Picture 1 (tube, rainbow, N blue to C red):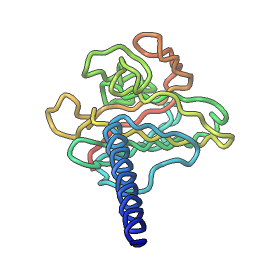
Picture 2: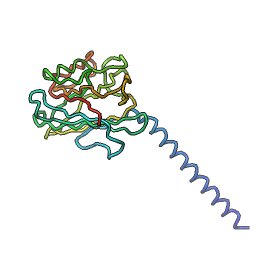
Picture 3: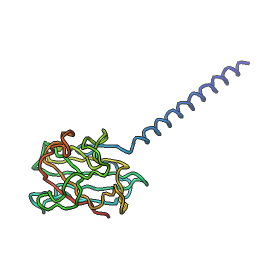
Picture 4: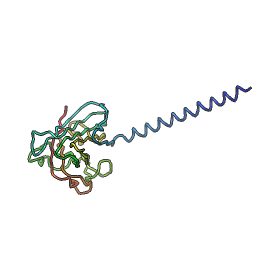
Length: 203
């Protein structure tokens, strides 16, 4: 007769463990649902390698078009999501912010002015990524370390590489600004001079 209470206790314990496991799975699902607007930044915080490299841009100094100051690489993660990894290496801008935006034209002439204004296919106001409203190319501020190095990664479903699509990023310009985006001033964020420029090219 003493075995019955022990058996009952074992069944209760197993049921409790199974319940905890279900709660953990639900939490994972909730995290995945928010992944369309993930942003990470820092000196060495790029995600581990995943996805397929589908596009890239070499970011060149507008003062010297032979000097590379960074890269932008685009990875297709699934049918809807693309991750952008930006790396900046510009010792002349050490310990300062730079602001990065997608611009309408892949034209780096006239010290980046050929890229024209911000790319804004959704016709929203300029702002801070992830806090509506914002342009689909409002990558925002990147803090450089004392060596002028920094990274920023953005994962989103706002971009594609599909020909003819309104959100196709191929052929756009990427501008690196020498100031801090205030996320408020329209339509540019008062981000300062165009110190770097690159064109997004399909791989």
